Image (cartoon, rainbow, N blue to C red; front, side, top):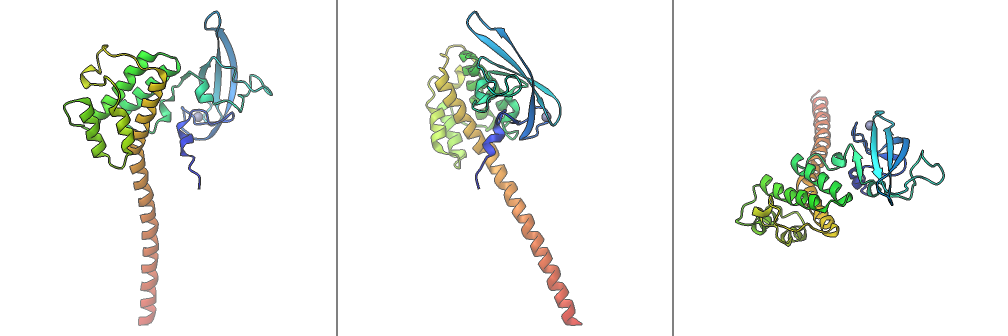
Length: 246
Ligand SMILES: [Zn+2]
């Protein structure tokens, strides 16, 4: 069976279906309400798309520099060939809801902000949010150690189920000493590094907060089914016992 759970982490799944940020329903249909545009600069046009959830009726707003409309039904449908999440650099509501709610809220907010900044090419802001998100993870998980590297190594030992390469990537982030997190004394990262650090952090968060909970809920479901069968069997055996006594 294929695992399509990654689609839950998207805003727009395709040109017809999204995960609604208002009613939080997954894989529901949406309708385009309209498109407008303005001159971002003398050379760049920005398009404003309004989208309505077919389930709850609420409307969202999305900005892009790209021409995302379908050649067949312009202004009423997006092109099916475009990754809409990548094309929209700013959305209201934000993509905050696309990160699993089991990840601590403070970290989710920082990652959403960092990703928004990357899309708008605000690399200083993105670097600051990414650094703070990593810092908050070490605080949340009470990582011990005198410096940044030893705190990440502490997490690596604590979460042995998580691929150790992921922690190694975080370990190797340059000038990430904890006392520098709130200062301006570091350089901003370029977007390639930022994307790597954010994806690494998201993978770690998924392994720490989502995977174990899913395992637990699956095994409790199995336990429930097992108990049900055991209960039925017991009842049948008792009935047989009784009929034997008679
Ligand atoms: Zn909705």
